[in-house]
Amino acid sequence: MTPSATKSPTDTAVRTGVRTAVLTVVRTATGGGTADRATDRADRTDQAVDGATDDAAGGAADGAAAGAADRAPGGGSAPETAGLTIAGDGSYAARLARRTGDAWFPERWTLDGPEPYAVELPGLQPEEPGSDVLPMADGRVLIRRSVAGRHAFSLLYPTGPGTGELPLGAVECERLALLPPAPGGSRAYALAPGPHSTAIWLVAGGDFGPEHVADVPGRCTGGVWLDRTGRMLALDRETGGVTKSVAVDLERGGEVTALLQIADGSDDRLLLADPDSGLLLVRSDAPGDDRLGWGVLGSRRPVRFPESLRLEDAVLTPFAVQPGQVLMPESCGVALRIESAEGSRLGVWRPAGRRLLQLASPEGWLAGAGLWSAEGVLRLPCAAGTGPVGVVDIEPLGALPLDPRMDSACDATTEPAQAEVAGQEPCGALVTPAVCKPVPLQQAPLTSRSQPG
Image (cartoon, rainbow, N blue to C red; front, side, top):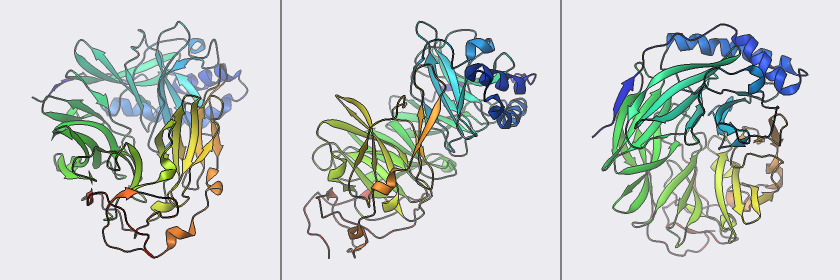
């Protein structure tokens, strides 16, 4: 049974004082020294609020009135935080935060201006720690709240001394989770698992509040966008006790296509995808234990499982892939969070580099958050102590030169997926990614092979 949606009447967004609100908050957080940096953001914020009156379902967020002094990120104790979610274009980010002993509140980061800064968006009531927030491209923040068996959505934005809120409606179901930010940043989607299928909902950016998009048979989790248009979505679907990633076409009623089928009984999950190069980062137990691997969307080459991505005493989780490397998946930089008994540290890897570069985490790094530029700059959001938020830029790919063996001639025929051995890393012909009809990465049983000459 498909969950039902409850619509909210269109509220008139408050336009008054938006420009003053942004400037006041930044000045309070930094002592007034760099308040002018927010000037170039005010016009975008004005547009965001104007858009709220024209399109009541254009996004979602949480919050209501609070004084500008109370919202200042730099005042008082350092906030506890949930994970930071970054918009697909890198312009904004959002998270839940709270100061010691205080209530949880949404916080919006602006990342694409001359200097990053944060604006707190507290509401009239404290937020539950289980609420979800997601940044929209127009500067508003979508929030999901659980209210009496429903999942209610709203858009939050700063208005004068307080927080404006635009209710979007609610979805009535037991469980629901927001998907990662959609390409373009004007829409937001969510998954609602049921007994036999998983519903996909458009919860922000529709015409009339939350809209049911599709039902996918089986229990689905995860969520990775495969293109730049927001049409193709990869989900990890569990059926018969086995998990495989599938591609869902949202413009064709949720048509499902196989995506990862490494071995018949293996659990194959997609972690990250880059639409430009077609690079896929996967996690699978096909090699015999749970391993990180990589493949290319639209290619018939097997998934590789590099030894360099296997650490005995740590868990590796990729969180960002370098964009803009069209038809060059082997050269893409990949950023990973390395979690061990000693804490979190940063890992940088690329297929043609053939080794994992391990780096100390910057002070205050929000572990697992970051994004690449096409030029190879890795941007890491940081919030150290009670100081202002910041972004640390590093250029680590110079320490990972391309291995010439990746350019050697390779047999173009499909070969079995296998773990890579040092000095024997397979390579494959580059194929233009085909996001509308992904080629399943399905291979023969795992066997050894000799290095092609």
